[in-house]
Amino acid sequence: MCISLLSAGFCVINAAEEGRDAAESEAKNEHAVTPEKKSRLTLGGYGEAVMSRMFYSSNYKRYTNAELYKDADSYGQFDLPHVVFFVGYDFGKGWTMGSEIEFEHGGTESAIEIEEEETGEYESEIERGGEVALEQFWIQKSFCDALKIRMGHIIVPVGLTNQYHMPTEFFTVYRPEGETAILPCTWHETGVSLWGRTKHWRYEVMFVAGLDADRFGSKDWIKGGAGSPYEFKMATSYAGAVRVDNYSVKGLRVGVSGYAGNSASNSLKPDSYRDVNGTVTIGSVDLHYDNYNTIVRGNFVYGHLSDSEKITKKNMESRSGSPSPKTPIGSDAISIGIEAGYDIFSQIANLKTKGNRLYLFGRYDYYDSMYKTQGNITDNDCWGRQRVAGGLNYMPLKGLVVKAEFSHRILKSRYNNENTLSVGVAYSGLFDM
Image 1 (cartoon, one colour):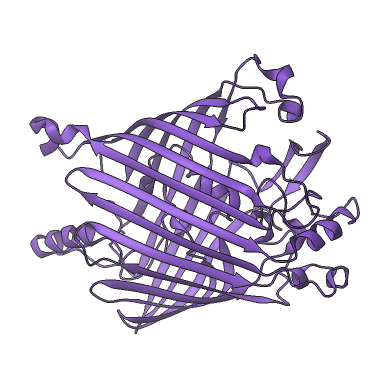
Image 2: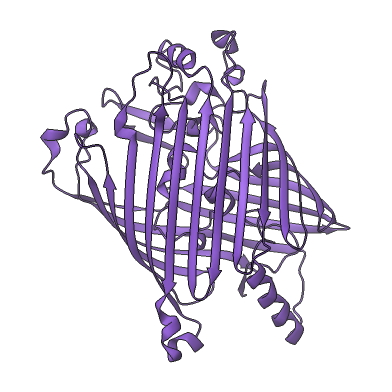
């Protein structure tokens, strides 16, 4: 077996297999020398293991009584953020299938945690119905490179991280904090996608089920509204998403993406949201530059939720068994992030020829899940944050990475800043049969 991100002729992990010009050229050159046997079956996936030390309090009151926890002891944790297994099959005549099963944090997507936003109670959290997460399951018909239709459970490619979410596609140990604080990640919904690629452009237009306003909240904005805690997905209201990427400049990809859809009527009890639309609109611009031994990635996301005051009131009034966080919801959310890394080994001839890479990187994020509020909604300003991080990514082989990072999370002046040291190991790729 060998690891290759382009061994199959269709999307296999993140719906962006045709967006890497350098990788395509490398694959073509390799095939020209040694033709490979092409199997109809493709296996692959990605996974991460992380060790972290947090130099701040884990107490749920650290934001309501910050002064009491200024000199708190540090604590540590081990984590398996994402372990994903992919199975794809080429039926022939342009028909292909792809599926991903994801295990988050080594579990079954149910957990006990302490609620940080209100009372500090222990609560049972269920992110989606079922024991594991089915992140993708689709059937695709390819008419040509420029026209493909995909039907099933698919990735919503809004923002940088949802489109490029494998651990070899960002420098930080965990996925970039800004985007993942306000958007579902990885965001996957059931629907239909039309997409394609020409020489310098890639496009995708998508029709999917809308979000569920029941699970919007202060800390994560509309993030909890994806998926479903039930055995089915409510889809009384629908949504659309679009993404366009340009590759005209060597080594540079620039993308724009957007999403729009109503959310209030997708509650299990839609009558409680009568005369409320809860329209979610999101716009994003992102870029990726890889040339001269330097990688730069950046993104900007802005989102708006209509009727946020009415939805907050309805959620606050919901019963104790409701999946709603029952917290105030912002009308607008924002995320800005940029990271840059330079391959130190590129300046050491012996290491460069062996294919090893060692990126020294830095990253900055600003994000606020309650950037603006509506009416009488009180802004929980602890969710407006900056984060500065720096560290190393060592890549001994294609598809493998060892990461080390120190981060400094900057909160408003009346709160305590939060430092974290993390080390992780990860892989991503396909395994040719």
